[in-house]
Each structure stands twice: as C-alpha cells, then as structure tokens.
Image 1: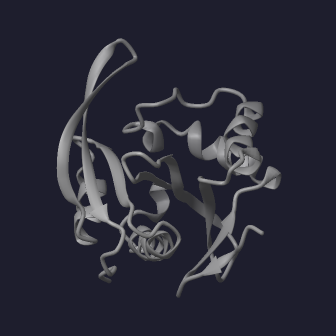
Image 2 (image 1 turned 135 degrees about the vertical axis):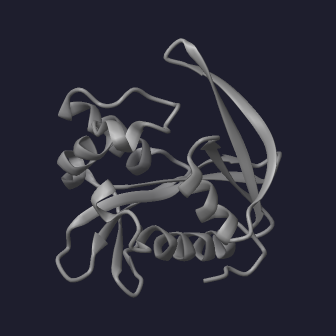
Length: 178
C-alpha cells in the first residue's frame, strides 16, 4: 500500500491520477524545467498521465513519487521521489522539483530529509544518487547539506547540445542531518 507521510509543514502523498493538472503545471514550467535533461517541458496536459503512470503502474515497485503539499492549505508545491534502482551497482536515484514561488523557505530541505531517511530504511546497503546539472547551485547545495559527495561527471546530449551533470552519492546507511 502506498503511504502518505507528514513532516512539520508538509504532506507527502503518493502521486495519483488526480494530480494530472498539477503535474502538467509543474513540468510545463520553463523555470522548473531549466535544469532537467531527460525530457522536454510538457506541452499538453495529457502528457502528465505518462509521468503519473510511470510511478503508479510499474511493478516491481522500485520507484515512488510524492506530491509535496503545504499542510495548512493542501496546496501542491512540488514533487520528489526515487527511481532507477540498479541492483547490480546497489544504487537508486532521487529527483525533486519545487515551484519557484516556494524557493528559499526550507521546504525542499524538509522534504529531502524525510525522503533520504525513508530510503535509508527501505534500501539498506544502497547508495543514493542525485544527478544534477552543473549550474544548479541550489540543488547541489541541498544534497551536500545531507552529506552527498561528488562522484563523477556525466555528459548528456539534450536539445542538440551537451549538458554536463554531476553525480552526487550518499551511502543510504548514513544518518540524515537536519
């Protein structure tokens, strides 16, 4: 059963079909998408269903995406989750996004603290990877806060030009810092 979780200020609920409009708003936003390298911004609301389906219908369940909502108003403000489990390398990737209206208020740090702790219990012995575009200074600072360390560069061709990313790594057995 997919669970909903709470932090001090947030509700983290599993993504579902009812989130189509919010997912479209998030992933059609150029500011949110400026550092993403795996897909073009959404153009049609129906494209949000592909994202939702990836996290709700794939089995075995090695990926999860949560909608971050403000506790006091149930306003969705972003998403975060994990995917790309590699049993051979003992790694799993995290990803996250936040509406720019909520940047700088500590919401992502609060949500990441929960997610990393959750993954630490769920994926014992695994390393958590964060693949971050080299110029995404805020995201790099966020993972470094939790003890992620630079592992390697990763180059991707996207939109016809190279994008350099950094892979940051965290041993999932380490305790989460606040």
